[in-house]
Amino acid sequence: MSIGKRVESIYRGSVSKISGLRIMRSFRFRIFLMLLVVGIIPAVIVRTAILSSYEDRAISVRESEVMNQLSIIANHLITYNYMGDPSNEAVNAELEQMSNLYDGRILIIGGNFKAIKDTNGVSMGKTIISEEVIKCFKGQKVVNYDAKNGYIEMTTPINETITDEETGRDIDVVRGVMLTSVSTDTLATTLKILSRVAWTIDIVMMVIIFALAMLFSRILTKPFNKVTEAISEVKEGFSTEALSVPDYAETEHIVEAFNMVLKRMRALDESRQEFVSNVSHELKTPITSMKILAESLMGSEDVPNELYREFMEDIVGEIDREDKIISDLLTLVKLDKTNTSINPSQTNINEMMEQILKRLKPIASLNNVELILESEREVVANVDEVKLNLAFTNLIENAIKYNKQDGSVHVALDCDHQFFTVTVKDTGIGIPEEEIEHIFERFYRVDKSHSREIGGTGLGLSIARNIIIMHRGTISVESTPGEYSVFTVKVPML
Ligand code: ADP
Image (cartoon, rainbow, N blue to C red; front, top):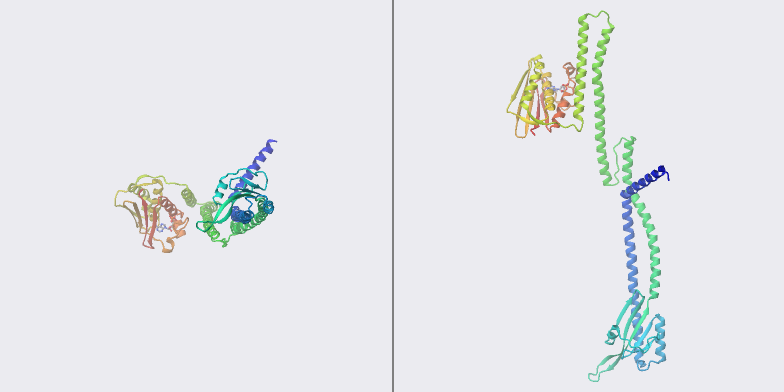
């Protein structure tokens, strides 16, 4: 065999082994197997039980039949004084007939244990002493069935009834014993025929049960196939509707769970599409502005130097904005990765807040906004310093950006044994109640034009919230438009 063919046959072998294993694991196969077992086992038990009880019954009927006949013969033996004269023709004929009828042998043993008659003729005159014979002389009948060799052996006492002279009562005296063996071959033949018939019935039943098991396993597992088909349709994109297979409670549960997953995936897909369209839009806006500025410069001749400078400054502003959007997006994408983990270290939060305020002071002084830090106590927590620094910077920067001329930003830091809390309160424009639930969404801005004017990307709060959630913390907002906004952040110390 060539190597190619050998590899192919090995491959085919392993494929058939895998598909064999798959069939064994299939629900339908197991139902089929169960029905088969449930159908066939009782049939086999019933057959075996019927045959064995038939055999017992037939043997006991044969035993009592022979016993009756032997009792009659025993009476005749006494009546015709056979024990004294075994040449009685009538009795001998009767014994021969009996032994021929049951394909057996009758031995008549006299009081001295000597065989006075043997229908086979071989043991005549021989002394026959056996346990059964001795028991029988004591008046006890013994019956043995030898299933292996196919005969029944029995001993029958030959009783003579005499009147006791002293008491005047009738008593039985055992004059001899009849040792009889009868063949059970005819019964065995009947049993064989019956067993053959039973086997035929069994085979027919097995075929019927096999067919029924195939049919029922197919019918019972159909709803599960329906589920697979429905899921495939969704997978292939042929259907977008919620699935429904109410045939069984189980299929309904599976389908409900699938519908929920589907809904979640669609929501994720929609938010991804929305995100992509928002990103494209946000990235395009500065480029469009730059193009317009550059084209208007190119289109007009003898542009005054001041105007040229002003346009170039605008272009640089747009480039800065583009740069900010891209770096914010990169931060957000990094935070969004499921395997992003925080890198915690013991951090002095008081020092961190001081640093942030110091860094933001120049921006605040542009609008003459006062920055106040109020620390209740020393807070040292196990946090990712770089990430948390970014989150608080975004919050405080917003409090400065969306503030009024000569306003203030009040940052308070406190802790208990579990959490530390930072509140950032401003005296700014505030956020309308209906907008509050949206401000953490990516690219969401309450007032687009105003936000753009003051250089927002709509990503700052989204980044801050992601970082706080990564620390298993919470963030909440309270605001009165035109008066103030207060952001409260709670982060576990450990
Ligand atoms: P942006 O870059 O636009 O500031 P953010 O995600 O940081 O984006 O904020 C989203 C929006 O929430 C802002 O555009 C603004 O409308 C509103 N906002 C955030 N912080 C404040 C605040 N302290 N006061 C008023 N409005 C705020």
